[in-house]
Image (cartoon, rainbow, N blue to C red):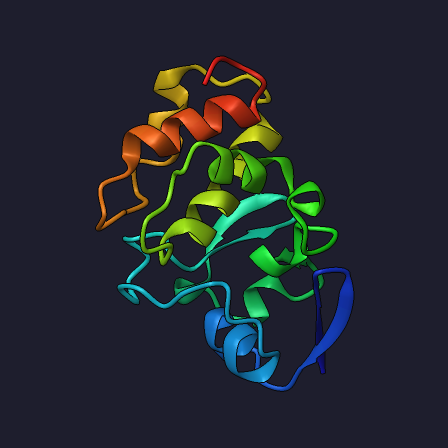
Length: 154
């Protein structure tokens, strides 16, 4: 039996070949990570594994066994605006979402970026989020939200 820690809770994995996104959504009921393309290209399924972004649709549970998986559900401490993770709060404050489908992946990608580079340049932000897709086209507001979360000008 394999174990994966998800949002701080150890979880047993029955099948190590199971898709991580399916495990999170259907076995654990954590539906914040979205199924988009199923090929790792859109970023909607992005979660953090040991603090770094990873496409859950392209990863097996066995590949992350023993690791710490953080989903969008695991980053806020409560349900009010003040309880949101600083990146989530910045996305709200910059109105960086329309339909919201892609936002969990963008938020998790941003948290991973800020874990590596606390004060990224505009170029680093664009590079880190280049493989995330937003059908609504709110890229400029997303970039401003990342800058705000990093403590820079929004």
